[in-house]
Length: 126
Image 1 (tube, rainbow, N blue to C red):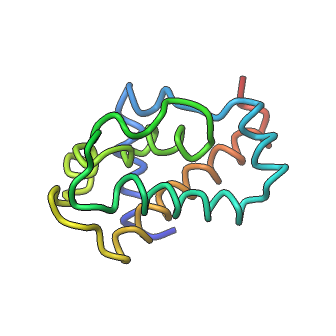
Image 2: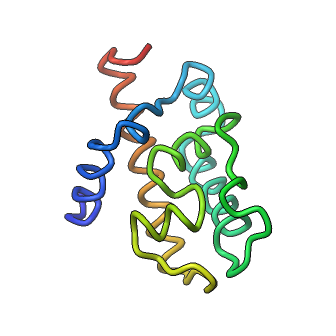
C-alpha cells in the first residue's frame, strides 16, 4: 500500500468519530451481490457528482450517513464533503477536483472498504 494511504489510515484511526464507522451485514451483502468493481464505479459516480464540482449547494450535507457502503466509507475516511477534504487532505474548496484527486479519493474509499471486508473475514465485525 502507498505510504500516503498508510499515513492517512493511521491518522483516521486516531479519530474517535471516524473510527466508529463500520460496514454492517446488509452492506457486506450488497457488496457481495454487486461485486467490488461495481462498488468502485459507484464511488466514482458519487465523488464526481457530489464532491468534484467547485460549488456544491448542500456542501456538508450531501453524503447520507447510511444507505450505501460508499457513503459509510466516505464518513469513515473524511471524504464526505469539501470541508472534510480540506481538513484531512488539504484539497482546496472552490475548485473542481482534478481527475487525479478523484482517483485518490476513490482509492482511499476502496482501501477502507477492503479493510472492512478483511475485518469481516477475520470475524471482527458485529
